[in-house]
Length: 314
Image 1: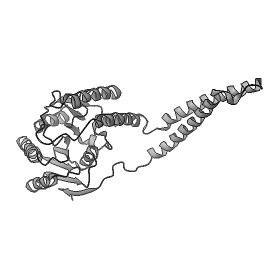
Image 2: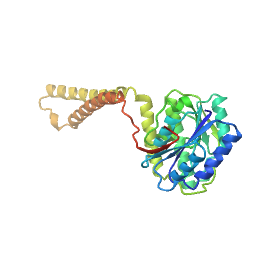
Image 3: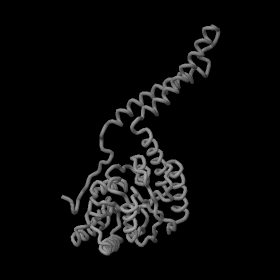
Image 4: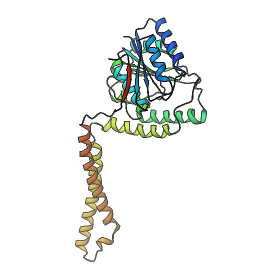
């Protein structure tokens, strides 16, 4: 199979028929073998009915339905797990991403050898204050912290080689940082393509300001996991050792001062309490390192969600 298109969605019944027809036209005109995986992330409208209709007309359109809303990361991760195509394309269901971009994204992966191509919506039709400016800030911070020179990390339109999606796990709210996750997994050929951004035709945006706060916290998590995920003791143990040694040598100083001068009021010194506190903190950090080592070696699933129905899968 040439291409798997993964589309996470929530309450997009109005846009789905037009989007599916558009994708079908692009695939047929380019003679691609393909599948379209539509992941209904707890929709409360008729989205699943539309997905069932599309599957009945063309079994290349497949569906996965969650029992409730788990978020875009969970939907993408489930799509990655089922994808069979040589190239995997992700896109949003609101018609703001153009399926006409699929052939060029496919060629960049297959012919130019990229591991991942991220779309760049250079010209946007979103609200300047609520989306454009925060997005620019978000992307600038992510570029600085990750070292990946992309202009639009959060663009839903991306292309991946099959090896990438089968090697990474997306959970929480970390779909914004898939290029960062891919880089930490060892995939270095990450590129960018300017893509068309279309005005929203139906419905309203499902994201608000809180996504930028959550996004910063998730970026911090990814950077930490990428560097210390397999060796947490190197982080917690180092901090714990430094903290303990500061408290220990401070205590030695206080004890020597007391021995040299019996009138020295040990417990009246702020340094006494500071030394005790940092020694306790250092010990706790060291123990946290041991616990983190045990956790990092466990294989518990981070993605845990209930699927209600599937179409096109046995």
